Length: 176
Image 1 (cartoon, rainbow, N blue to C red):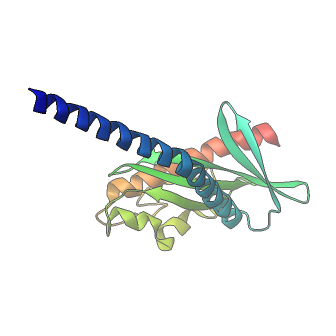
Image 2 (image 1 turned 180 degrees about the vertical axis):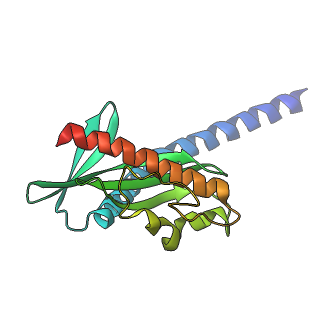
């Protein structure tokens, strides 16, 4: 019985030390993760609106959007969005210019199947959305060429971009 008590106490101490090490590591690494995510987002915004010299953060109904500005003139608005794909979440940034045209799409992350659904990140697929007007249907197989063998992933990103473009259009109406 004494050996069992000693073993339980030893395991408890090891577990507590391991938990403490994990907590300290998390506290030290988490700010760096946030900074990297922010840098990736800003980089995506610069790709969508390369002529912009400033991005102003706007919060509407607890959602964060970014107003692209050049010399005080609004060029468009962008936001980060998430939609569910085949294997999990697909996170992307969509920008819409003041005329209602999609300025572009940048993928921030996904967990789609390598070799199939992961092809949503290919430039040949994602570039199809640039230049589309927000009032277009964005129909997979008609307006947008899907990826063979990855219909769910193709539909998820297409629907997500369409919904994001519609949301950004309503944001444009509020901030112009």
